Structures are given as C-alpha cells and as structure tokens.
Length: 415
Image 1 (cartoon, rainbow, N blue to C red):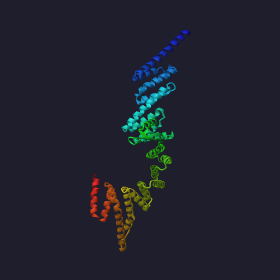
Image 2: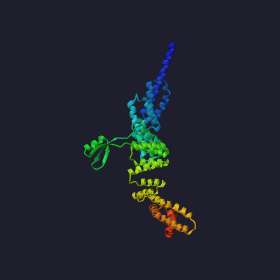
Image 3: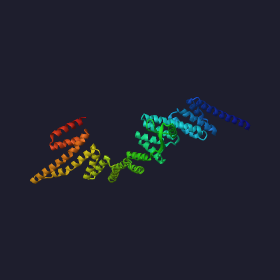
Image 4: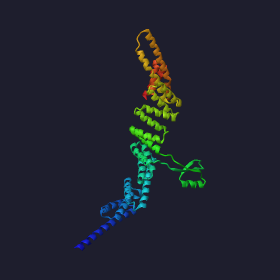
C-alpha cells in the first residue's frame, strides 16, 4: 500500500509539472506571435498553478506575465505600470532584459509627455513626465518637468508635492553643456560632445566650448514658497520664502512676494523694510516706488507718499494709479476744511473765514484736476476718475468742461 501511494503521488506531481509547463508555453507562444490578449488570457490560467510552482517556474511566470502586459510597448498605461511592478520581481534573473524594457517604457511615457506638451495639454504632460521618471527613479529632470507643467495648469497641490520631492533629494538640475558656433548661420548651437567635436573637425562649426547650467534650486524653493502664498499658508510661505531668498538674495520678485505676505498679515514695518530693500536693488522700478507711496500714505506720511508717487511717474509717465493716488492725497486735505466750514457761525468774522476756507477748498480741487485729467487721458475708460473730475468741474463752475466729462461718463456707463 505504501508503494502504491508513493507511485500515485509521483504521478500527481508529474501531472502538475506538465500542466505548469503547458500553461507557461502557451503564454510564451502567444507572446512570440505578438498575440498579447491571448498571452494575458493564458497567463491568467497559469496563475492558478502558482501555489505548486517551484521558484524557477514562478520567476518565468512573472516574466512572461509582465511581457504580456507590456505588449511590446503597446499596453495601456495601467498595464505598463503593472508590468513594471512585475518586472521588478524578476530583475535578479532577467536583469538585462528588464533594463531594456524599463528604458522602452520610460521612453514611451516620455513620448506621450512630449506629445501632450506640444498640444498644450500640460496636465497630461505633467503626469507622463512623472511616469517616465518613476520607471527608474534616476532621471530627475523629468520630475522637474512634471512639477513645472503642473504649475502651468494650476495643479498647485500636485506641483508642491513634486517640488518638495525635488528639494528633498537635493536636485539642482546643473548640467554640462557643449556648444559651438555654426559657421553658416553664425549662431551658437548646443550639441552633445561627440557631435560637437565631429562638426568642429569637419570645420562646419567653430569656437567650441563648454559651460555648466545654472542651478534650478532657487526656482524650486521659490515656487514652493509662491504655492504656499497662493494657498494662504502664510507661516509656511514666509519660511519657504526666506529659504528661497537665501538661494537668490537679489531676486526682487522674491522680496516683493515676501513683502506682500507681511502686508497681508498686518506687518507693515517688515513690508516697508523689504520694499526699501527691493528699491535699493532696483531703483528704476516704478512699481516699487508706487508701493512705497501706498505704505507712506497709510502711515499718514503724506508728503513722503507724494514724493514716492511722483518718482513712480518720473520712471513711468503712464503709471495711471500714481496720478490717481496723488489726486487722492490732495483731496484728502479737504476733510478738515469742510469740518471747520460746517462749524462756523453767522458773524462777519465767520463769513470771512468761510470764504477763505471755500477758496482754499477750490484751490485743492484745482490742484487735483491735472492729475485726474492725466489719468483719464492715459486710461480713457476709467469711470472713477471721470466721475471725480465731473464733480470737481461742477463745484468749480466750469460748465463746459463738466458737460464734456458728463458725456464721457454716460458713454462709459452705457458700455
């Protein structure tokens, strides 16, 4: 009985072994015929035998399964991703084959990324750039492209995660570039080293050279900071902004971005300090002068505010808001005059003082008119400036000018 049992068991094991080989051969045959749907179906059938396969058969099964999913690069995105995971189970046995296929999959994702980018489909371009990177996790440039294209379509949360990953891995993107000047066009061309040397030898190019590209780290930390600003996370934004400024201390845009955060949080002193720093770096920037004027005005430093606005106009004669804000500074002096006028009695002295104050008030209007008129000349659709000017002309009794501005206001409001 014992002998019969041993024979029966041997027959049973042999049957399983035969079934394994048969199913694996079916997968292999379908792959060789490029019939990948049949290969996937055969692999599904072979899956039921995994429990009794030896290690060698299991390895071969996973390799064939991955190939059936890969489908010579024609598999779906989901199948390609599963194929990659499956190939990693057999890397030790099929190392060279797996590396070649991984490179092909990476190239396929990269091809799709470039195609999406060319059609301005930045969302899908970003995802395919990331997929291309994830295949081997080595070419970080594609992860950088993934983050940058995500920003293009305002997928900020996703971009933030990618940028943070780049920052944590210490990515700089610094590369050595090889170049030479094309003798025919006179333009410098970037080439790989071998091609450049070949062209120089053939004398079609001259002035060969090489240089290192600039680090992308300042841009990465800057974008991290700006995304936090956009999300309203002021604490993280300021922390990230300081790191970004440490990388690029003379980037005025970074200084202004941090200044704006401090302004939002009510820290006007730090805001003003940063604006002055930016002004020192870019003394010819009218926007900086204008912003300093706004802060000075809010701090009741009216003469200083006017000087900043005038400097902005000097740098940019068509800076509309600077003209309007100067007119506002002038008209701001009207309030105490009106208050005093309303408090006067009916005596001769009061009547005399009233006339003096009225004349002073009208002089303020006359002082404001040129600034408002200039703003309206530059921005002919500025309804607010037009209405203010209309009120002033009515008060000054300049009827003809008032009629002209009134017609302009009516036209603007009907548009």
